[in-house]
Length: 240
Image (cartoon, rainbow, N blue to C red; front, side, top):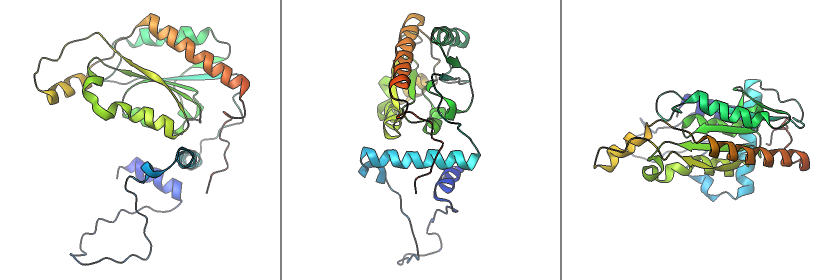
């Protein structure tokens, strides 16, 4: 279990989490005084149950880290752009930043910055493990996801993981964009091509990004105007 997963689990359940590996028990039966077993149990949860689980993790992780969310954000729309280095970084970061800054600047109360995801309404990011942190954003927050050329054709079900996570945690996955430009895989082997495209850079389409961002901003602005109660900040009473 990775350290951050262990910390999240302990913050959620309020106690030490120990993974039993059964070493030293031999081949006989093992009796437990108390045990909790997790193995793909999330598949059996209905949507409402999943949202309750993510609400609890989100709330207790914020409490554990001392993250204070003060009331409702009112008409403010907060946009966070997560940038990567190496594989799946944007080829031209300044151009991508410029597109989203310009569209954000056209909407009253919109501000773009890099800070806590708990203070984010719209997450803009290329596909990657850094997006896992979106579970700490508020419910009904929006996610915009980007892929390098060739990645989707070889990614299998992995391409859907953050779309699923958004659904499970009560967020809005606003779609995926895949780069059409870039080098073609020089190999015949699918496995080699998978790694080749996975580590590719992500380009940008200024016109498409601008239109896409404008549409998402319009939706978020309307949502904040008409359904403040639904998207209120989790100033939170943690579920038990």
